[in-house]
Amino acid sequence: MKKINPFSAVYYIKENRGRVFLCIFMMVLATLMFLAGNYIHSELYSFEKEFEYSDKIVVAGIQSTDEEYKDFAAFREAVKEDEKLEFVDVTAYGFSGMQHGTVLGLEMGGWSYVFNSADDMKKVFKHLGIKGDFSKCKHRSMVISQDFADNKGIRLGDKLDHSFDSSLDGEFTVDAIIDDGSFCTFFVFENDDIGRLYIYSDTMEQEELYSYVKNLAGDRKVQISGSERSSVLPQFYVFYVLFYAVDILIAVVLAVTVNSVVTGQYLKRTCEFGIYRALGRSRREVRRKVASEIILMNITACITGGAAIFLFTYMINELVYMKKGMHLLYFSGTGLTGFILCDILIVVPLIWSKGRAMGKADVTEF
Image (cartoon, rainbow, N blue to C red):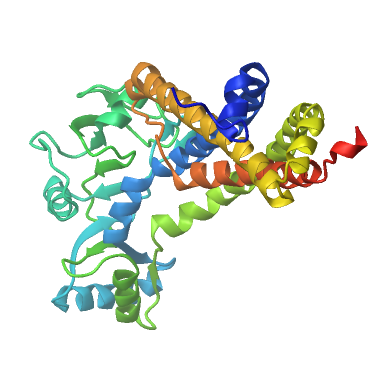
């Protein structure tokens, strides 16, 4: 049987499982920032489908006074004559989306769309790729997703009013439930008072579509709304600032804690490294050995923590969140960035300080 080289990192970890376990456990805590980042990004991800819809529809309306209706009417004619654009007329009557719960336990408001007729709604749905049975949709109908229904405990045919959600003005019937995963609320409200347009295109979307519509409006006094993405994203900046601030704070605390644990271990091994130096090992080789030991422990911690987080995410999604129409992400750029930042702040100073200290070990001092 091949023996392990005593100078290798594997040899030390194998022969000192108890000490190493404590270090690995402390490093595993850093992987929790990956989970925390996934929670933060899951909040924003719940708006992803709404962002997709908003990227494909520009809302244009009268700014404020009746005197500006002439500009709006002229703009409507320009849109109608433009071969690149399609539109439906929308009432000026205001509608707000209903609140929905999130994985962080917060209540957030979804986007809303209102249509003057079920036919207009079907026309826009076809453009957005939304499918379902809309045969029962009529005046004062409401269409929501299955996730939204699960989140709020709503069933097909339910009649909802102000007592259910403060944003609702009057009674609406849930006449269709779609499987698109969004938290949008789609209303049918038949009204001859035209004050807005939903403008879309088969060839343009996002900034290209918004810029095209704005250029078409020109100097006319018409209000062109921005995309939902541009209005919602700034509201999440505070979440990300707080997350990364807490991430750095936790990294510092863990770095100090892990450093204290590891320092005690390596102080007891000063004689060992002094012997390595006396046997001809260079300082670079000693530092490399220390780095390989810490990196191997860190890799073990990452794999262990990652597996635990995956299992936790799977269990809580299956047992809690999916039943409420919510979903905790398994992976996110926010979580990965938070974890890498935390891990680097722990491991790099540890490798540098311990490698430097053990490289100076001298057997003649004992």
